[in-house]
Image (tube, rainbow, N blue to C red; front, side):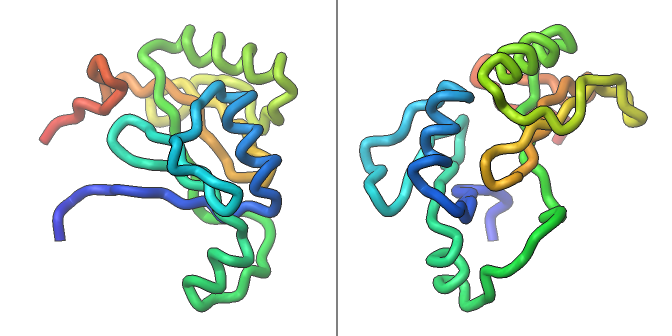
Length: 142
């Protein structure tokens, strides 16, 4: 199996509300392939899709019940610490729920967390060990 990620699908309670969150709060544009049943956003190299939670659970053959911490986060890395602060200020002005204010963290970076309408946690972080290229992809060390 190739080492890559193609698509991340978030099961959401309300597709319209969640789609509007990513469009209005994050400023992202839906792909034309989106419709009333699913929403797609092209990210840098992968797709993020939003799909009704119950239908996603049914497709996977599992229960859709559950609450609390989902045991994963999604990260949006920035190029500087200042960019983290600026982005959090903009999101807060749009009434995005700030879960953790920006702060220096133990691993040497600078990090904050926000939540989408389904309480999916987005880490907004500057990681000095993972520089980004011009497209926002991590350069890393191979």
